[in-house]
Length: 411
Image (spheres, rainbow, N blue to C red):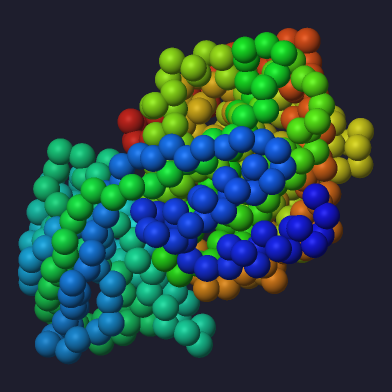
């Protein structure tokens, strides 16, 4: 894919396209049209996502209001109590949360921490976003995810800026009151599916998410991955292969891999015919190393390292679970690998206003796409996909921990 086309893709998608919004649908339609320009038919598949429309959100610290963002889907109402700063999530810290408004050092919360706080009797939760030393005072918008709440009660959750969080602790604020009013409803997100048939009825599934967080235009995370899929599509579209290529541009990844989870749920009967999932999440940065996280047998990690050495393309490959759309495939028994070029967040930040195409190199993106296309070609044209259809026990354990089926063991 030439530089001009790549630059045009980033220019055309240079806006926030958050899960379940009209802008996300606009991005999905754009990707569908891009596939069809390459001669590959594509369709949109919708799935339901929980949505919230915040009517008002306030946080008062000893009577003084500070800026905040209410969490979508955390309910409506008021909560007041003593502020409790909780930098850790150990049992002793959790025990102090009873009847308190808990201030955490994080931007969100996982299943077990939330369950523990609810059992301890926490009244509400404050999270923090941003950097004390940055000139802007952006506050991200998040949601209280259903899989985090589980069977527990919902409590009000709000995000404040880190500078205000520091002030709360420094000034020994005693009482916090949170007020949130919102309308909760079921919204719609979409996966974009495109297919290049092969000689058999088996497939290599390639995935990348296209949605963004509330503050980000998402050039790096993850229109770069979507451009990668389009580049692979262009490179391999005219070639015969034994395995077909199925391209899945996932919506709502940023809200807990909702698009890929919907895909494997709605296509569960077809999963035995998918030999491998190749997921792209963040490639093409000016700086950073290329990694492969393999949720499959260790031989695939070795293969990618060897192939990189053969082609003069360094790859840091290892087995494990990557926090992206490869995970739902692996959890259903489909061997999967996530490919990414990981740069320091100081030079290529994500989930913020600075995730723009300026952090990308079109030349490096072309090199990354060329390597991914060659790897895909080798897998698709193999007489028999060489990757064993077994997920190793250590990867299964990591999947259980990532998906909150088991607590992560303390080391």
